[in-house]
Image 1 (cartoon, rainbow, N blue to C red):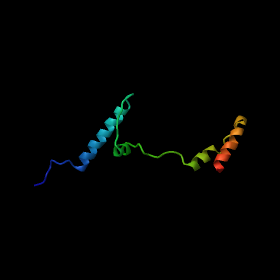
Image 2 (image 1 turned 135 degrees about the horizontal axis):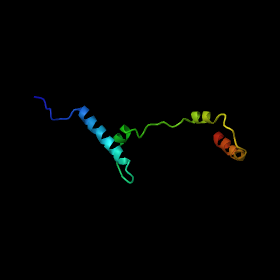
Image 3 (image 1 turned 30 degrees about the horizontal axis):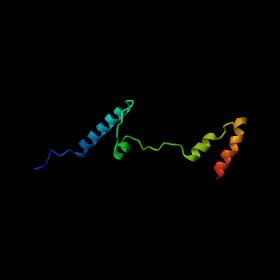
Image 4 (image 1 turned 60 degrees about the vertical axis):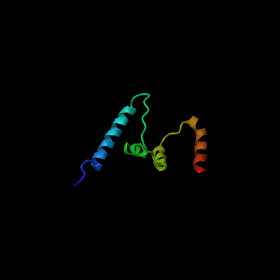
Length: 83
């Protein structure tokens, strides 16, 4: 005889998704404190890395005009890049 009372993985996943969805809705309430465990946070997309790479950031500044007032700062940027 099989035990049908234990939840299936699909049911557990659906419950987890619903819980995360409710937590995200609650998190939109100003002042609300909603805790996510690391797995929930990852499933909610908290750790999606979508920042520009350094190379992309440097490519984005190509062709930008430098204002005369910013020329003094330019030497600081150049020094930081060469450090």
